[in-house]
Every structure is written in C-alpha cells, then in structure tokens.
Length: 504
View (spheres, helix red, strand yellow):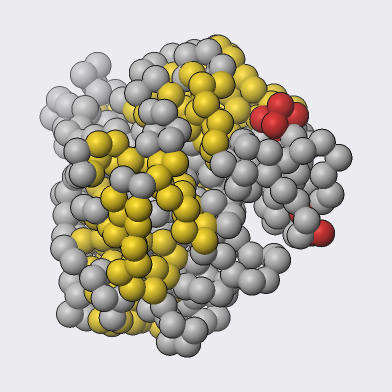
C-alpha cells in the first residue's frame, strides 16, 4: 500500500500526477489514488478488489469520486455515434495519458458502449453471459444481468460475446455468441424481451459463433442471422444453405419479426446504415458478399458476391459508405472493392487484382477521412501493416509494417491506433506519410520509457512509488478498436479494460 502524501490544499482543488490523482471534496476529505490502489486520507486504508476480480473497486479506480461532467458525446454502438469509427471530440496529444481506472473483465471480444454516465459491458464469466452497467468515470458496477451460455468455439478462441451492446431510447440490446438476442431496460437491467435466434431460425453454428453487432433503424433492430433449414449439416461441410433469414428486422420494443430477407449466411460485419440518393440505405457484408437494401422495408437492391474460395474464411470488416459508393474489404482472398450504387443497381469502381492488393482488412474496419482510407492490412500478425490508400482508386499511399494487426479510432485530425499486443499510438491523419505523434505501451509488463520517466520524477517529488509494477496490462489479443466518450478513452485486451483520461 502506498503512503498518502500531504500538500497544502484549497476547497475542490484537484492535483494531477502521472498515474496519481488527488481529489479534495466539498466536505474537505482528501482522497489519493495511485496506480491500482486507492488510499483514503481519513483512514489510510486501501480497499481491495472483490474475490472474483470481475468488478472494479476503489482499488482499481483512479479516485472514489466521479469526474466532473464533461463535454462530449455518447458512444452508443459499435463504431461510435456515426457508425464509422470517428469521434466528434478532441484528444490530448501530449502522452502518456493517465489511467483513470481499470478492471478485470470476462471472456469475449465485445467492446463497451457508453451513454450518459453509464458504461455497458457484455462479457462471459464461466457459463454465464453478463451484461453490466458501470459508472463510466470510475468503473464501479451499478447492475448486472446474466443468462446461461454453453457456446464452445470450434477453433479455441474466446467463448464470450463478439458483438457490442447497442443503446437506444432507454434500452440496451445484446447479441450473444450463441445467438441469444436480448433487450434490457438501461436504467436497471430489467429484461424486456429475448429471442433465441439460433433456435428460431435454425442457425448452424458459424466458424466463430454469432458476432455481427445489430443496428437500429427507426423502430427496427436489424441483425445478421443467417438461418438454415432443419437437419442442415455443420458449417465445415461447406453445404450449409440459407432459409430466408439472412437479414432479419425485429421490432425493437417487442422482439417480433418485422421482415426477413435473403438466403445468405451470416458474417461478422456490422450492417451500415446511411442516407444517400434521397433515401435510406442498408449495407450488409454477409458471408457470401455485399447486400444493398432499403432498411425500413427489407427490399433488396443488389447483391455483389465477394468471398474467398477457401471454406474457412470470413468477412468481418463493416462496409464503408462515402456518398454513393461503398467500400468492402477482407483478408482471405479477393481483398477490397469499391462499388457505386443506385436504386436496384451497382457497378464496380475498382477492385483488387489477384496480386498486389491495396487493402486486406481482417476484422478491423478501415476509416475514411478526406479522400483516404486508413486501416490495418493483412490476415496474420506477421504480415499485417498499417496502410493509407486512395479511396477513389485503391492506390497505396503509404504503409507502416511491424505493428502487427491493429485497430483505429479517428479523432480531431488524428488516429488512435491500438496494436494487438497493447501498444497505443497517436498518428496524424495524413495521406503523406506515417506520422507518429505519441505512443505508450500498455501491453508489456514494463512501462514505456516516457511513462517510466514520469513515474520516476513523481516518486522523487512525492515519495510515492508509481512504477509499472502495479500498472494494468493489455494482454494479447487486443483486437477491439479504442472508443472515446466525453474525454475518456477505453481500450481492452484479453482480460483487462482500461480507461484513460484523454481530455485536452
């Protein structure tokens, strides 16, 4: 336990140190948080985490009091408020960022969603899938809702959820890896309805279970389901056929089916919704290719086949829509293509040749900014590199090898890049070159040089040890793109969720 450090104080003053925050409340109590310990100056006591380690406690937060209300926006769904991986906020460019709180989490690849002061996390603990609501500024859990799951992954990957919670109109929607679709009341977790989509639509277990996050369109919840006729063979036979439930729209208030279209099987790409050409459009990158449709009725405009020839291949990157074009990418075979669409029609603007592909995104979704697409290209960590390509032509503008597979978040002229082994980078969003602004390593047991130096300086001044020994670690695989809401940056690895103070 670290010893408290006394300083002259004034009412409601906050003193920030690297990996330490000193808070003075209106009642005159001084609270010091350093690293993973929280020390109350009234008692000198340190509060330990709960035995199962699943909830954040004051020992895992950077302060027992919440941060002041911050200007910014919610992050209510996968890929954020605009559904394209772009934040509307600003970010601090002088790093390292301080850790606000961290917590041990369960199995899965689901990134949290944030609405108001609440952070909603969907993960798995033992044989229970768990949706929890926590204070976004402290990580302290407010409620949880669980259901039993028996999903077993064919390839030995995590057996927890892949899809992120979707927050809309006072409700939280989750789509489990086993296919359980549920709607909860956001305020207290009360279950409002649920549909076992695997049972209802005859879904044959996909290579990695169900994983595409649903989207909201008006009063509809639209999801990739991809059911099959009864007595269908397993996915590895290559003989699985659809039964008309490729894309299903549910009434978001009741769970009742409003429409069901296509015989296509499900992939891991979240649907994209947009307004273009004076109407609403939906795009779903299914296992077999891209579907363009009208999302309120389900009327299909076109289908563009796009899948690798090998059976064990998936489409996982969300379609990127710019004006009347839609970009798709995968990493097992054909690579990328840009289509121009119109009601009932589509045409290819460009597509990758058999060799020398422009972008081969595995599961990260590229981000468009001012005529350029940025993303991680490559199926495996060894050959993956960060790339910028010209949107109109597919021309590679620059590439940066050695980062392994990574994910991106755009914010205020920069990209926050998280590598799969926990290295966090800030680069300029420019087509000219890979322009590194700052970085910090959350993936190694040792702090990066900058954070180590800051900790050493703080210790010399205060007598408080803020070394990397009590620093949380993002363990492989860190496959989720960072999210930003009201100045707080959230990143996750295998078993750890970390909240960083990114306020300018």
